[in-house]
Structure formats: C-alpha cells, structure tokens
Length: 461
View 1 (tube, helix red, strand yellow):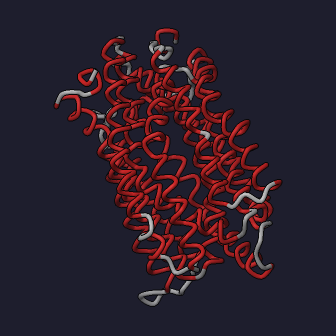
View 2 (tube, helix red, strand yellow):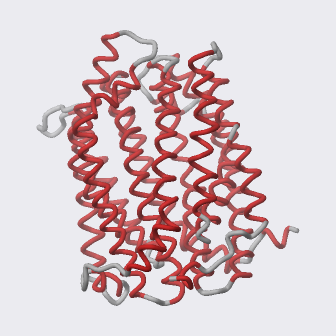
View 3 (cartoon, rainbow, N blue to C red):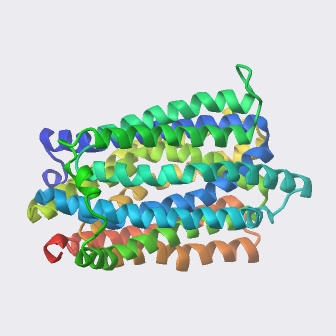
C-alpha cells in the first residue's frame, strides 16, 4: 500500500522541478500581497475593507482568465507531450484571442458598474460613514487597477504556455521581479516616501499596475528571444488562423472550464457577500484570513498545477499506467505535506492578525477563520489534486459539476440561508460552509479511483 503511494527520488526530483518554481513564485506573490495588505491596513480599516472588496471583484476576473488559458492548456500539455509544436502554437493563438476579448469585456463592466458591485458588500452592520469611506477607497483603487488588466491577460497567456511546455523558471523569475517592484513602490506610494505623494490605497493600485507591466515585458521579451526553447512563439504569429477542428474540441472540452471558473469565482464572491451581512468587521477579518491562508496554500496549489502538467504530458504521450501511478503518488504527497503545513498554520494562527493595525474583534475573528482553514487544508489539497487530475484527462464537464455547480447549488444557498434567516454567529457559519467541501472529497476520490480521466484527448483533434 505504502509503495503505491510513495515514489522514488527520481519521481520527487521531477515533481519538485515542475512545482518548486511555481511554489516560489506564488509564495513571493502572496507574501507581498500580505505586506501590501498590512501597508493599506495602516491607512485605516475602512481603506483596507474597500481594497479587499475590490480585490474580490478582480479575483472573479482573474479566474475567468485562468479558465480561458486552462481550456486550451489541457491541449497544450498533451500536444507538447507528443512533440507537436504546431499544435502548441495553435492553442497559444486561441488563448490570446479568447483572453483579450474577455479582458475587454471585464474592463467595460468594471468601468460602468464598479461602484454598484462594491456597494453590494457594504450592506451589513456598520456605520454609514464607514461604508461611504470604504466605497470611496474601493472605487479609487479599482479605477487605477483597470490599467493593469490587459498586461495581466498577456502574462497569463504566455506564462501558462511556458509552464505547460516545461519552462517554469522564467514565469517564476518574472513573477519574483514583479512582486519586488510592487513591494518597493507600495512603500513609496502608499506612505509618500522619497518625495513621492502619500496616495494611500491609490498608491497600492499604482504599484500593482507598474509591476504587471514589468512582468509582461520580461515574459514576452524572453519568450520571443529564445526560439530554440520556444518554437511555438514564432509559429504563433505566422498566421491568424486557428484550426476549426481544434477550436471545436477546445470549446467542447474547454468551455466547461471557462464557465466553471466564472461561476466558481462568482460563487466565492457571493459567499463573501453573505458573510459581510454579519458586519464590516467580518469583511476585514476574512480579508486578513484569506491573505494568510493563501500564503500557506501555495504548496497544494503548485502541486495541483504539477498534476495537470505532468499527468497531461504522460497522457499525451500515451503512457497511461505511468500516468495513473504518478497521479496517485502526487495526490498522496500533496495531502500528506499539507497535513503538516496545516498543523503549523493552526498553531501559529493567533500571531498573524497581530501584525495588522485594526480592532481586537477583527483580530479574534481572523484567528478563528485561519484555524478553520488550517483544519481543512489537507482535505483541500486532496480536492485540488483530484480536480486537476480529472481536468488533465479532459473531464471538464465533471469538473464543472464538481466545482462551480456545487458551490452555487450547495455552498452558496447554505451560506445565504444561515446569514439571512438565522442568528448563527459568523464563526460556526463559516465553518459549516467550509465543511460542505468534504462531500466533494468523497466524490473526487471515487472518480479518480474509477480512472474516468485516463484518456488522450488530442488523438481526437
């Protein structure tokens, strides 16, 4: 039993070679996000709340872009596994068209309805003055962030393709440089250092936008100056055409992924809106806890991405038994590692909120939320790896039901009923909603064990 779950040194070297750059990039990104949060929090709780709400809305946009690149990404990994660079270029072209279109739509929606969307989170308990201050900070932050959405889109198109073709170092390096730029200019522009004006929340947005342009420049220039490593880069712009059959296959297999990311992110945003009915202090506490939790979640998120890359390439190469063996060991590795990480996070939970300049009630709530997520972490790791396993084999309809349908039809109605029609305190309410995901763990275990995902999807293209 143990030998089927534990790999040899060669296996773990391969896994770490793929996942470690992603982990490092995500860790640094989330660490800077934590520092960003603390800096904005120094301006005041209302500013932090406004920025947190806006970032929740941008999170929906970001996941829609992730859904677009993932839709063709499952084909990219399998094309690369088969050695078909022309196929990789075709999927890259599809990413650019679909993501730039979605990016334009997102900018229009935020520009026209941003203030209305932010206001939805300011309906709970709290003074009208605090709500007005949070709304003003959120709108100001959002308007500047719109300038950085297209660079973000381009980076996602290029970086995802580089990872799917085994080039994980450059996206990591670009991400590290970008977050360092973000960190430095956060300090300068939020607090007005070195003669710059003190812009508060607007300074945080300006620093983020600047960092996204830096990241885009690094990724695009490297990709197009290293054609030997990236043959797809030159091929991508040799034509504007994407093969009709490939488009059809991506739409059939990938559309559920696009729709899934949209509805899942909307579900998460709606959950946060339900929690906000317990007061503006809950919005601030969930912002702190999610920032800390994201810092710890980089392990299982990176390993989940490794599942899609490693297993996708093996399936594309036709090595099905090796794919099954590696997948089982990857899931075990991710779950076991996150059991240890979750324990550390649970014990250290009271320390993190102390670094924020906010009320004691917000700190206590944030500690409770962090501990709930720490208990859930190994289950979340198993769930995430199972999701990417199903996705790597093109089972996108199942992942759509598994993910967004579940949150919209089970988690969200439960949170809405508990928040609006009961007096259940926010901590047990939050814990109850998170516990519902254990149902998905059982479903994921059954589907992975039945091997419904073991298929080569590019043979049909």
